[in-house]
Image (cartoon, rainbow, N blue to C red; front, side):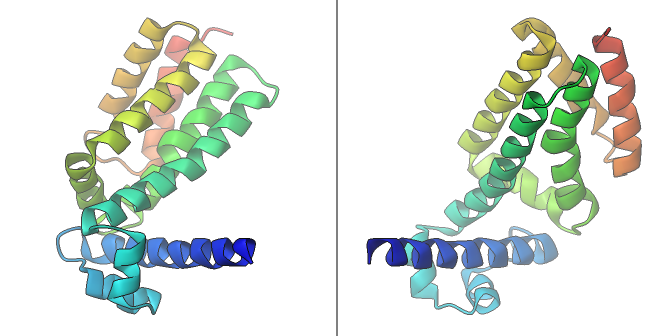
Amino acid sequence: MQKIFFDRDAARRRVILDAARDCILKFGYAKSSLEDIAKQAAVSRPLIYRKFKSKEEIFGAVLEDLFETQYRVAEHALAKPGSRREKLMSVYEALLLAPWRELIVNAPMGTEFYEACRRVTPDIDERRRKIQLKYTQAVLGTKEVSEVFMLAVDGLTHDLPATKVLRRRLKVLIDRFVRD
């Protein structure tokens, strides 16, 4: 009985998160309401409040869910055989390029959503940066070199390039940092 309740609870949470992601990426952070999310998820607003305390918590959970999926992909990339260059590229395919495609390139309001979440849930962004540092350091070795690499990666995105352009820039950067 306990497992059935947990599965149903997890399924409802998943439906709410997916609906919230759809609303946010279409309408943006400010214009997405709990009513919109409830309609999209085909659930009641009280059910949403039982799962999440606030709109900010839902949006933070959407962002965290996106990154959690990518962390598993990055861990898998680190565990696979390959050169340091290949591993670093695979890690950043997961941590940068996949979210970039979903949030920035393919969603009209993705940039606004990401920036709003960074403001209202800075703990999620801080956790993401720590995990990114851990994975980068697993390839590059030292914390200092990894931090500089991450700062350089941040610089690659300021003009909001297409994913293809960002991938090319990332390859150039990796070639400068990794000598296999």
